[in-house]
Length: 87
Image (cartoon, rainbow, N blue to C red; front, side, top):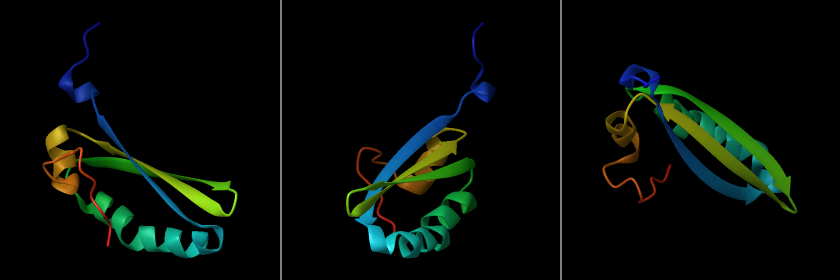
């Protein structure tokens, strides 16, 4: 059965690492910057944040879901292979 464009979505993955002792502070930072920006961008369908402890660090994996590539480009910019840094 062919999928319609309405059934499709785009997933974007972003990874980051911080020192283990900075985990809570960095997650709070993400909530007030990147995650807030994701939610405010047209076409965003939601975001998941996963973390795991690896040695002295915490790895972050953010997965955001978008209605279309154009909507995702509204957040990430036109050059999708190039990263968008949250500052």
